[in-house]
Length: 329
Ligand code: TXA
Ligand code: MG
Image (tube, rainbow, N blue to C red; front, side, top):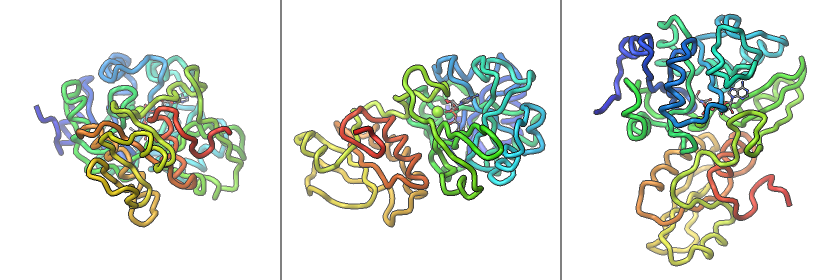
């Protein structure tokens, strides 16, 4: 049954009844539930087959709500929120007890953000509670950037999917821990890029690569992955390695390397715009995963601005193969 709808009131009613609703955001689509109700939150983990150690992000309607759910240890937290909310920034803050342990996987911190999407902001304003929402994909798979992506994979698990069109950024939010009045640590690069953060004249460090015992639970090495074999590296070399197969190629810019019917080329952007590239990345990975090709290969994009988030997703989605940006020599 098609559950895609424009009915914000109906979505609010389902959420009040403890059901799951797909919500559009500027980053990716979320799978939302009442963040203050453990039973509803547990449904999210079941629907996604998500391990319980991977905490959820709480979505609120505005900065004025923040005090209800978290402590604000540094003025810099508020400065960041004022500057970048609504927008693709998640702040990790000490949680207040009103947030159930199920949301935070037992951590004493909670990830919070105000999404920049008119429909979801309207929904949040109607509701009496905030929304816990991970990306609306089965655990480990590519995140959804369109309502039909959510319908295809989780249509049976939720009550309704609010249609908010294509997600603007196409990659998730940047997750930040504030360390002092002048320094932050990035736990995941996403829609908010390094230049914007550094414009605040603060020290920015990052700790985004972790293994099966991550400091930010959920920052697992393998994530965002298609089901087809997926390799990243130097395209000319990868084309040789996979010669004879039907290959889907994800490129930064359009460039036909070998003109063969068995090779399909797809560029993330025609003019080097990294936001256009991130906007297309997940939808393209999904499209190739559902096509009849044998293997997907991709090259890294310039490792600056939104390129950091794109390269992070490419790295995590692919099998370790050829060297990419920031790989250790
Ligand atoms: O853009 C986004 O952030 C999207 C949209 C729907 O808002 N949401 C999203 O959620 O990407 P999810 O669940 O796919 O990724 C959330 C990640 C977790 O895997 C975890 O790494 C991190 O956020 N996280 C959440 N709470 C945390 C906490 N208290 N401390 C450290 N990391 C946390
Ligand atoms: Mg996710």
